[in-house]
Length: 165
Image (tube, rainbow, N blue to C red; front, side):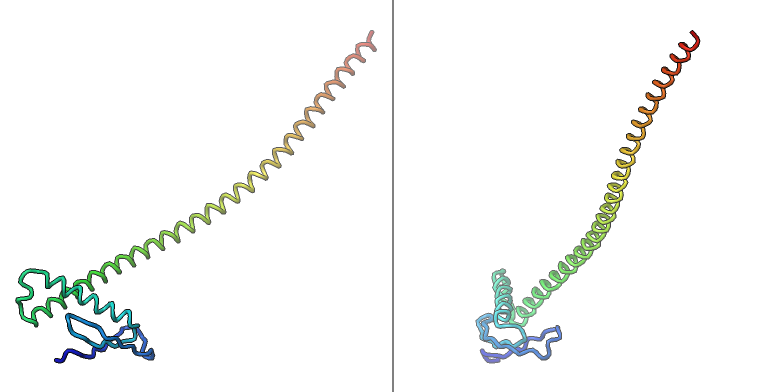
């Protein structure tokens, strides 16, 4: 295997017609040409991640004394472990998002229902105020009529007394 190798990166999305990008990257001291539909910055980030994983494992005691094959397998296992943990975190986040969306929908529905009830209550209040105003006027008119009738009755009673005398 020579120091400069070409590696094609596969993308699971449906970007079959996209332009292929290439970037020379340094992975564990060797130069590789990575190719994929992602931009060069992304390809460099991938290489950087692999270098970080490799360096992390090389800092562990005894790792570098193992065979190259063992080291490559351990790096692959650690990268796969990170992948599955990230996938699990993404799934948990997605479930939380879905739950929050359902809760948000429920709260929005409750808010709309409460607003409609409030509007109906405000309308009833206005109608009740109008009715109360009418009833107050009717009561005032009835009171005035009662006072007028009392005054008439008194006047009538006085006239009757005068007529008897």
